[in-house]
Amino acid sequence: MSGLLALLDDVAAIAKVAAASVDDVVGQAVKASSKAAGAVIDDAAVTPKYVHGFSADRELPIVWKIAKGSLFNKIVILLPVALLLTVFAPWLIAPLLMLGGAYLCFEGAEKVWHVLHPHDHHAEDTAAAKEADAHLEEEKVAGAIKTDFILSAEIMTITLAALPAGLSLWFVGAALGIAGVLITAAVYGAVALIVKADDVGLHLAAEARTAAGRKLGEWIVRGMPTVMKILVIVGTAAMLWVGGQIIVHSLAVMGVHAPEDLIKGIAKAVGGASGLVTWAVQAVIDGLLGLALGLAMIPIVQRVIAPVAARFS
Image 1 (cartoon, rainbow, N blue to C red):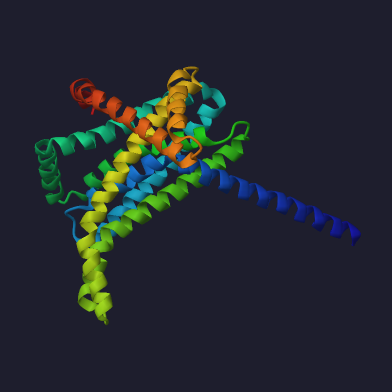
Image 2 (cartoon, rainbow, N blue to C red):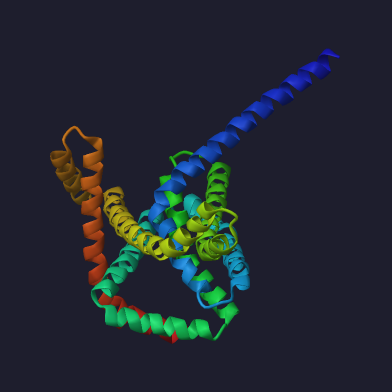
Protein backbone atom coordinates (compact mmCIF):
# COMPACT_ATOMS: atom_id res chain seq x y z
CA MET A 1 0.00 0.00 0.00
CA SER A 2 2.82 2.36 0.91
CA GLY A 3 4.42 1.61 -2.47
CA LEU A 4 1.20 2.57 -4.25
CA LEU A 5 0.96 5.81 -2.27
CA ALA A 6 4.58 6.62 -3.10
CA LEU A 7 3.86 5.95 -6.77
CA LEU A 8 0.81 8.22 -6.65
CA ASP A 9 2.94 10.93 -5.00
CA ASP A 10 5.48 10.60 -7.81
CA VAL A 11 2.75 10.79 -10.43
CA ALA A 12 1.31 13.87 -8.73
CA ALA A 13 4.75 15.49 -8.63
CA ILE A 14 5.31 14.74 -12.32
CA ALA A 15 1.86 16.12 -13.13
CA LYS A 16 2.67 19.35 -11.27
CA VAL A 17 5.93 19.71 -13.19
CA ALA A 18 4.13 19.01 -16.45
CA ALA A 19 1.42 21.54 -15.60
CA ALA A 20 4.06 24.14 -14.75
CA SER A 21 5.83 23.38 -18.03
CA VAL A 22 2.58 23.83 -19.95
CA ASP A 23 2.00 27.15 -18.18
CA ASP A 24 5.55 28.22 -19.08
CA VAL A 25 5.08 27.18 -22.71
CA VAL A 26 1.77 29.03 -23.03
CA GLY A 27 3.21 32.09 -21.29
CA GLN A 28 6.26 32.19 -23.54
CA ALA A 29 4.08 31.60 -26.61
CA VAL A 30 1.79 34.52 -25.76
CA LYS A 31 4.69 36.81 -24.85
CA ALA A 32 6.68 35.95 -27.98
CA SER A 33 3.70 36.12 -30.35
CA SER A 34 2.88 39.64 -29.10
CA LYS A 35 6.11 40.78 -30.78
CA ALA A 36 4.51 39.95 -34.14
CA ALA A 37 1.78 42.57 -33.70
CA GLY A 38 2.50 44.40 -36.96
CA ALA A 39 2.24 41.31 -39.14
CA VAL A 40 -0.82 40.08 -37.21
CA ILE A 41 -2.72 43.36 -37.65
CA ASP A 42 -1.78 43.44 -41.32
CA ASP A 43 -3.04 39.88 -41.74
CA ALA A 44 -6.37 40.84 -40.16
CA ALA A 45 -6.61 43.99 -42.29
CA VAL A 46 -5.73 42.28 -45.58
CA THR A 47 -7.88 39.13 -45.41
CA PRO A 48 -11.41 40.67 -45.58
CA LYS A 49 -10.79 41.79 -49.17
CA TYR A 50 -10.71 38.13 -50.27
CA VAL A 51 -14.39 37.67 -49.42
CA HIS A 52 -15.46 40.93 -51.06
CA GLY A 53 -17.98 40.34 -53.86
CA PHE A 54 -19.17 36.92 -52.68
CA SER A 55 -22.66 36.16 -51.38
CA ALA A 56 -23.18 36.44 -47.63
CA ASP A 57 -23.61 32.68 -47.19
CA ARG A 58 -20.12 32.05 -48.66
CA GLU A 59 -18.22 34.57 -46.52
CA LEU A 60 -17.66 32.46 -43.41
CA PRO A 61 -16.86 29.26 -45.37
CA ILE A 62 -14.21 31.20 -47.32
CA VAL A 63 -12.73 32.62 -44.10
CA TRP A 64 -12.67 29.09 -42.65
CA LYS A 65 -10.85 27.74 -45.72
CA ILE A 66 -8.24 30.50 -45.48
CA ALA A 67 -7.86 29.92 -41.73
CA LYS A 68 -7.20 26.20 -42.29
CA GLY A 69 -4.64 27.06 -44.96
CA SER A 70 -3.00 29.54 -42.59
CA LEU A 71 -2.79 26.93 -39.83
CA PHE A 72 -1.26 24.45 -42.30
CA ASN A 73 1.30 27.07 -43.30
CA LYS A 74 2.32 27.71 -39.70
CA ILE A 75 2.21 24.23 -38.15
CA VAL A 76 3.01 21.81 -40.98
CA ILE A 77 5.45 23.87 -43.05
CA LEU A 78 6.94 26.74 -41.05
CA LEU A 79 7.20 25.14 -37.60
CA PRO A 80 9.54 22.32 -38.75
CA VAL A 81 11.60 24.87 -40.70
CA ALA A 82 11.90 27.04 -37.59
CA LEU A 83 13.07 24.05 -35.52
CA LEU A 84 15.64 23.13 -38.17
CA LEU A 85 16.93 26.70 -38.09
CA THR A 86 17.17 26.54 -34.31
CA VAL A 87 19.26 23.37 -34.43
CA PHE A 88 21.39 23.76 -37.55
CA ALA A 89 21.50 27.44 -38.53
CA PRO A 90 20.55 29.82 -35.71
CA TRP A 91 22.78 32.44 -37.36
CA LEU A 92 20.24 32.62 -40.20
CA ILE A 93 17.42 33.86 -37.96
CA ALA A 94 18.59 37.49 -37.88
CA PRO A 95 19.06 37.79 -41.69
CA LEU A 96 15.67 36.15 -42.24
CA LEU A 97 14.13 38.56 -39.78
CA MET A 98 15.65 41.43 -41.76
CA LEU A 99 14.10 40.10 -44.97
CA GLY A 100 10.74 39.85 -43.23
CA GLY A 101 11.16 43.31 -41.77
CA ALA A 102 11.97 44.69 -45.22
CA TYR A 103 8.82 43.03 -46.55
CA LEU A 104 6.72 44.68 -43.83
CA CYS A 105 8.31 48.05 -44.64
CA PHE A 106 7.56 47.58 -48.33
CA GLU A 107 3.93 46.58 -47.68
CA GLY A 108 3.38 49.54 -45.37
CA ALA A 109 5.08 52.02 -47.68
CA GLU A 110 3.11 50.72 -50.66
CA LYS A 111 -0.14 51.46 -48.81
CA VAL A 112 1.10 54.99 -48.09
CA TRP A 113 2.08 55.37 -51.76
CA HIS A 114 -1.42 54.37 -52.85
CA VAL A 115 -2.91 57.03 -50.59
CA LEU A 116 -0.61 59.63 -52.17
CA HIS A 117 -1.43 58.33 -55.67
CA PRO A 118 -5.17 57.51 -55.59
CA HIS A 119 -5.34 56.93 -59.35
CA ASP A 120 -3.06 53.90 -59.08
CA HIS A 121 -4.99 52.70 -56.04
CA HIS A 122 -8.30 53.04 -57.91
CA ALA A 123 -6.92 50.96 -60.76
CA GLU A 124 -6.01 48.21 -58.36
CA ASP A 125 -9.46 48.37 -56.71
CA THR A 126 -11.11 48.07 -60.12
CA ALA A 127 -9.00 45.04 -61.02
CA ALA A 128 -9.79 43.46 -57.67
CA ALA A 129 -13.50 44.09 -58.17
CA LYS A 130 -13.44 42.46 -61.61
CA GLU A 131 -11.66 39.46 -60.17
CA ALA A 132 -14.21 39.21 -57.35
CA ASP A 133 -17.10 39.49 -59.84
CA ALA A 134 -15.91 36.26 -61.47
CA HIS A 135 -16.73 34.40 -58.23
CA LEU A 136 -13.65 32.22 -58.56
CA GLU A 137 -13.71 31.15 -54.94
CA GLU A 138 -10.91 28.60 -55.06
CA GLU A 139 -8.53 31.01 -56.77
CA LYS A 140 -9.32 33.70 -54.22
CA VAL A 141 -8.73 31.27 -51.36
CA ALA A 142 -5.47 30.06 -52.91
CA GLY A 143 -4.30 33.66 -53.35
CA ALA A 144 -5.19 34.47 -49.75
CA ILE A 145 -3.26 31.45 -48.46
CA LYS A 146 -0.21 32.42 -50.53
CA THR A 147 -0.30 35.92 -49.07
CA ASP A 148 -0.81 34.44 -45.62
CA PHE A 149 2.27 32.23 -46.06
CA ILE A 150 4.52 35.28 -46.29
CA LEU A 151 2.93 36.93 -43.27
CA SER A 152 2.90 33.64 -41.35
CA ALA A 153 6.60 33.13 -42.07
CA GLU A 154 7.30 36.58 -40.64
CA ILE A 155 5.07 35.93 -37.62
CA MET A 156 6.74 32.60 -36.84
CA THR A 157 10.25 34.02 -37.31
CA ILE A 158 9.51 36.99 -35.04
CA THR A 159 8.02 34.64 -32.45
CA LEU A 160 11.05 32.34 -32.66
CA ALA A 161 13.47 35.25 -32.23
CA ALA A 162 11.47 36.54 -29.23
CA LEU A 163 11.80 33.28 -27.29
CA PRO A 164 14.54 33.25 -24.60
CA ALA A 165 17.81 31.51 -25.41
CA GLY A 166 18.60 28.12 -23.94
CA LEU A 167 15.15 26.57 -24.21
CA SER A 168 14.86 22.91 -25.11
CA LEU A 169 13.80 22.00 -28.64
CA TRP A 170 10.48 20.53 -27.52
CA PHE A 171 9.75 23.72 -25.54
CA VAL A 172 10.47 25.88 -28.59
CA GLY A 173 8.34 23.65 -30.80
CA ALA A 174 5.44 23.67 -28.34
CA ALA A 175 5.64 27.45 -27.88
CA LEU A 176 5.70 28.06 -31.63
CA GLY A 177 2.82 25.65 -32.16
CA ILE A 178 0.70 27.31 -29.47
CA ALA A 179 1.58 30.78 -30.79
CA GLY A 180 0.63 29.70 -34.33
CA VAL A 181 -2.75 28.37 -33.20
CA LEU A 182 -3.49 31.40 -30.99
CA ILE A 183 -2.53 33.91 -33.68
CA THR A 184 -4.52 32.09 -36.36
CA ALA A 185 -7.59 31.92 -34.12
CA ALA A 186 -7.26 35.60 -33.19
CA VAL A 187 -6.71 36.81 -36.77
CA TYR A 188 -9.43 34.82 -38.48
CA GLY A 189 -11.86 35.17 -35.58
CA ALA A 190 -11.46 38.93 -35.98
CA VAL A 191 -11.82 38.61 -39.76
CA ALA A 192 -15.05 36.62 -39.35
CA LEU A 193 -16.44 39.32 -37.05
CA ILE A 194 -15.43 42.05 -39.48
CA VAL A 195 -16.95 40.47 -42.60
CA LYS A 196 -20.22 39.62 -40.82
CA ALA A 197 -20.58 42.87 -38.89
CA ASP A 198 -22.64 44.47 -41.67
CA ASP A 199 -25.04 41.52 -41.72
CA VAL A 200 -25.40 41.65 -37.94
CA GLY A 201 -26.04 45.40 -38.11
CA LEU A 202 -28.63 45.03 -40.85
CA HIS A 203 -30.40 42.26 -38.91
CA LEU A 204 -30.50 44.36 -35.75
CA ALA A 205 -31.68 47.44 -37.63
CA ALA A 206 -34.56 45.49 -39.18
CA GLU A 207 -35.44 42.85 -36.57
CA ALA A 208 -34.42 44.15 -33.12
CA ARG A 209 -37.33 44.31 -30.68
CA THR A 210 -36.27 47.58 -29.09
CA ALA A 211 -35.51 51.00 -30.52
CA ALA A 212 -32.08 50.87 -28.87
CA GLY A 213 -31.31 47.58 -30.61
CA ARG A 214 -32.39 48.94 -33.99
CA LYS A 215 -30.30 52.06 -33.42
CA LEU A 216 -27.30 49.92 -32.53
CA GLY A 217 -27.74 48.05 -35.82
CA GLU A 218 -27.76 51.33 -37.73
CA TRP A 219 -24.59 52.47 -35.95
CA ILE A 220 -22.84 49.20 -36.80
CA VAL A 221 -23.72 49.49 -40.49
CA ARG A 222 -22.69 53.14 -40.66
CA GLY A 223 -19.57 52.64 -38.56
CA MET A 224 -18.00 49.62 -40.31
CA PRO A 225 -16.44 51.61 -43.19
CA THR A 226 -14.76 53.86 -40.61
CA VAL A 227 -13.65 50.83 -38.59
CA MET A 228 -12.08 49.31 -41.70
CA LYS A 229 -10.26 52.56 -42.48
CA ILE A 230 -8.94 52.76 -38.92
CA LEU A 231 -7.85 49.12 -39.08
CA VAL A 232 -5.93 49.78 -42.30
CA ILE A 233 -4.26 52.87 -40.82
CA VAL A 234 -3.30 51.05 -37.61
CA GLY A 235 -2.10 48.04 -39.61
CA THR A 236 0.03 50.21 -41.88
CA ALA A 237 1.57 52.09 -38.96
CA ALA A 238 2.25 48.82 -37.15
CA MET A 239 3.91 47.31 -40.21
CA LEU A 240 6.24 50.29 -40.64
CA TRP A 241 7.07 50.43 -36.93
CA VAL A 242 7.66 46.70 -36.50
CA GLY A 243 9.49 46.42 -39.84
CA GLY A 244 11.86 49.27 -38.97
CA GLN A 245 12.37 47.94 -35.44
CA ILE A 246 13.15 44.44 -36.70
CA ILE A 247 15.79 45.69 -39.11
CA VAL A 248 17.48 47.96 -36.54
CA HIS A 249 17.47 45.27 -33.83
CA SER A 250 18.62 42.55 -36.24
CA LEU A 251 21.57 44.72 -37.27
CA ALA A 252 22.49 45.01 -33.59
CA VAL A 253 22.26 41.23 -33.20
CA MET A 254 24.63 40.90 -36.16
CA GLY A 255 27.11 43.30 -34.54
CA VAL A 256 26.05 46.66 -36.05
CA HIS A 257 24.94 48.50 -32.90
CA ALA A 258 25.23 52.13 -34.03
CA PRO A 259 21.69 52.59 -35.48
CA GLU A 260 19.96 51.05 -32.45
CA ASP A 261 22.16 52.92 -29.98
CA LEU A 262 21.51 56.22 -31.78
CA ILE A 263 17.74 55.72 -31.82
CA LYS A 264 17.65 54.72 -28.15
CA GLY A 265 19.81 57.72 -27.29
CA ILE A 266 17.49 60.15 -29.07
CA ALA A 267 14.41 58.55 -27.53
CA LYS A 268 15.92 58.72 -24.06
CA ALA A 269 16.98 62.35 -24.52
CA VAL A 270 13.47 63.35 -25.63
CA GLY A 271 11.52 61.12 -23.24
CA GLY A 272 13.62 61.70 -20.15
CA ALA A 273 12.17 59.86 -17.18
CA SER A 274 8.93 59.01 -18.98
CA GLY A 275 9.11 55.46 -20.24
CA LEU A 276 5.97 55.93 -22.34
CA VAL A 277 7.34 58.99 -24.16
CA THR A 278 10.68 57.24 -24.70
CA TRP A 279 8.91 54.23 -26.19
CA ALA A 280 6.72 56.44 -28.40
CA VAL A 281 9.68 58.42 -29.74
CA GLN A 282 11.59 55.21 -30.50
CA ALA A 283 8.52 53.74 -32.23
CA VAL A 284 8.09 56.88 -34.37
CA ILE A 285 11.75 56.83 -35.42
CA ASP A 286 11.57 53.12 -36.23
CA GLY A 287 8.39 53.76 -38.23
CA LEU A 288 9.94 56.63 -40.20
CA LEU A 289 12.97 54.47 -41.00
CA GLY A 290 10.61 51.70 -42.09
CA LEU A 291 8.71 54.12 -44.32
CA ALA A 292 11.92 55.44 -45.91
CA LEU A 293 13.19 51.93 -46.57
CA GLY A 294 9.84 50.78 -47.92
CA LEU A 295 9.52 53.73 -50.31
CA ALA A 296 13.05 53.07 -51.57
CA MET A 297 12.11 49.43 -52.20
CA ILE A 298 9.01 50.18 -54.31
CA PRO A 299 10.83 50.85 -57.63
CA ILE A 300 13.18 47.91 -56.98
CA VAL A 301 10.26 45.54 -56.42
CA GLN A 302 8.27 46.88 -59.38
CA ARG A 303 11.12 46.96 -61.91
CA VAL A 304 13.33 44.06 -60.80
CA ILE A 305 11.78 41.60 -58.35
CA ALA A 306 8.23 41.51 -59.77
CA PRO A 307 9.28 40.84 -63.40
CA VAL A 308 11.66 38.07 -62.27
CA ALA A 309 9.00 36.51 -60.06
CA ALA A 310 6.47 36.68 -62.91
CA ARG A 311 8.75 34.58 -65.09
CA PHE A 312 8.78 31.76 -62.56
CA SER A 313 5.10 31.95 -61.59
